[in-house]
Amino acid sequence: MPPVREYYERLSTVLGPQHWWPAKTQFEIVVGAILTQNTSWSNVEKAIANLRAAEMLRPEAILNVPMARLARLIRPSGYFRQKAKKLKAFCRFLEQEYGGSLARMFETPTVELREKLLGVFGIGPETADSILLYGGSHAVFVVDAYTKRILQRHRWVHEKTSYDQLQSLMQSAMPQEARQYNELHALFVQVGKNWCRGREARCSECPLEPFLKESR
Ligand code: SF4
Image (cartoon, rainbow, N blue to C red; front, side, top):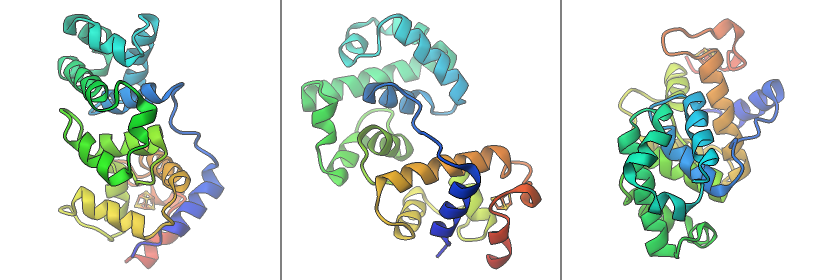
């Protein structure tokens, strides 16, 4: 079992609070979680700024706007036609299941809501878990490519380890608490961006370097 609590404590001490998710409303978190698929956050910010300027950061506005206009507004986030369909699919789901209320949606028990979200077009496990954790404070750990890369390089998992396996590994090594899952995910993103990069691992400068030896 990876020493996840120790990772968390070390990274919190070195990097401090991460203040995620950078959004003004719950709906903006949902929109960001969908738009961030396969692109960088700076592109998502441009798309969200366009939606805000057009007063479209409301479920009913997304439902009513023509698809072509929505796609144009979110163009900076890439794959914009697909993502326009995904945003509309989520808003339709919200309207049909919860009368358009995110508050009602987030009152649904975690396992049940996760299943329902995974049934919506364009929502996979990482997006569903981002919505649950950052939008609704449900205690689910969000696994991403950084999580996998870090655990793989520390030899706790391998290339074929699945999303669900990674998630249960992380969750069983930490108290089941949204605040800590929120923070650790954000801290891992910092490690992945700054030190544990795809082509290059800058271990000698990385805060997780002390854990490298014991995993080998
Ligand atoms: S950069 Fe090195 S020490 Fe840091 S997380 Fe990656 S493998 Fe571990």
